[in-house]
Amino acid sequence: HESRPAGLEGHGFVRETVGDSGVVLGEAEEQQMHELLSEWRKAKRAHDFPTANDVEDSLLGMGVIINAKTRTFRIERCRTRLEAAALRHGYSRDPRDPSLSQMSETEELQMHELLAAKRRAQRSHDWPTAEARSADLRQMGVKLNEYGRTYRIGAYPTGHD
Image (cartoon, rainbow, N blue to C red; front, side, top):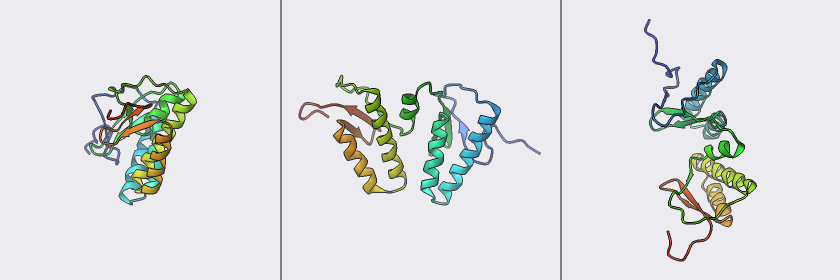
């Protein structure tokens, strides 16, 4: 019989070749990753979005970032809680952010948790919760750009976007 290409263990995802850190997972970790990818796809097909979100959070906890549109994944090795938290939502700080505002590590972890909660709510089509998390982020001084999936921190002069 023909063997499947690496990564097509029933879930249909393949590892990205560009932007991947090159991290090699141990055999048990890799098996767990493939099981989670299969579970995620099964949940998505069943429209069980809460389960899919939980599975995606588990994958992110392993440093596995999936792209559902291209059916690819990449692996990032996280060294700190802050790095792991920043992977859970898909937003990044706008490189053009003119603000020099900084947050404490505790505030930054809270911001990442709110961003992740907002994304989970969006993926579950729970718009009231997503809007509530956006309001919480605005209270912290975080301005979101949904199109670019970026954020800025702090106050800006009137008319600045």
